[in-house]
Length: 403
Image (cartoon, rainbow, N blue to C red):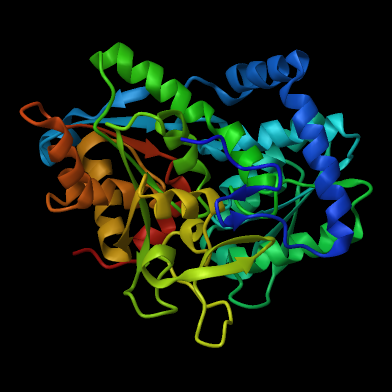
């Protein structure tokens, strides 16, 4: 696999910088600061120490024996739900907050959908003594009220966004407006592999610790690499974080699971590869859900973290290359995955992660087809990235009738 992005931030035809002129200078400042920091042993040491002492890394690679029996495969869960604050988001939040402090920024702004990125950002800002403001759509605030309160407990200001669909897309819009106005003092701590260069590569790099750990752990546990990696895909940071360390391993298949929502009618899902085409949103070119007039479409998912109309540009590139397969799981199946993991393993997954679990529960899924093709006479070996824990989703799940 080539080393990407290129100097202009492109992954093939995707990525780049599509922002107002007022943001070109802060993006260049950020790129320069990150390139210097990634070569600085002191910065790398501080980040790695923070991951170990504050975040709680390495996270376990857990053998899910009862889920394995149910699925007819050997399944491991990469337990990002055991990170401090309850999700993988803290890896990137810590890295960017340390970088912002290095740049002399005293104020952090962020967007959040499911709330986990907001909680992670508020947490590291409290740790480092930085002012924090988090933008969140009012629909997401309603379904993620617990995380709103957690952010406030950490001292963050949570600013409601009541425009558009009142979800993640609109929260990003407001955060970018804030950044344009306050670039001298403020760093925008973007939560996924989205946005203008250098964000997609920088967030990927901070999250790639997931895959590096998983690679070492599975080799120690099984003496071999997995046949398939599986992760949910919203913007795409948890999935690219797992996948990145395995991209050059041609025998390892990878499956990203998008939100199928209520169905494949535009506006009822967030499956960008099934219903979208190339477009530009929030500073980057990627796959995008939009209507015939080019207007960004509404999206739906039972999980707030997957409810976004575009996807990270590196995912778009890897999709077109055929290196990663993408599929979608609807709300009903995701709820089934949530319940099954609770009952089989005593683990409460985030609804986002439950999409990946649900894909593995289906014996006819692309995951099992890929696994059987690669495993031959051996039992298939699968790793699911459990990107976060589901405390935040209990009230949402309770609101659905039992089937």
